[in-house]
Length: 260
Image (tube, rainbow, N blue to C red; front, side):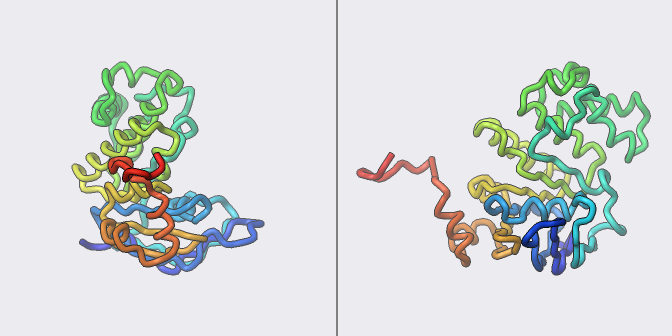
């Protein structure tokens, strides 16, 4: 693989914060890989994602470099990087129909006209496994369930055919059955389209099930990075070991005498 992005000594400090949110983070993101970024709340994983996207608040102190050797120049927001966030209710416009929101990326970045963009929106809605895509395209966000809204957000994020998809805690507000379906959908889409996925989560089980590599964040630092299976089987840092120890494998029944 070749590097899509190269992050060097990245540091981020929010205004009036006592401690930096990120300190000296360096890694490469390989083209076509699924990289899971995991850690506890406050570990800096979402700050890392927003720095990558370019969505940090104003007056945030940023140092270090993010280079994009896998792109022709700097990434174009919405075109080269697609973003899916934790709460689709806040990322979708409540007064616009679903089809208009999904088709916006195709109109703005691919140059499609209104009719072609509407047709592309219906196609994308079907592609994220929503039934009756024509009906969904005419609906408003409040008429859909949380899981359906998250699928719509994914469809909108891939409308401009980005090279990188960043998914920041996209399953944390969903029940476990819907979580599994959303993760399966993300993997299917990125593999089919050759996209790179940065999957930000606190859930080690989800990360280890889909990722090629896992990056572990703790206190704003990258403390461990490696192939998913190796990192989970033999963690090298206390932070990673704690995440592994906290994971309960529900597929394995407890031994006789163990607590239920």
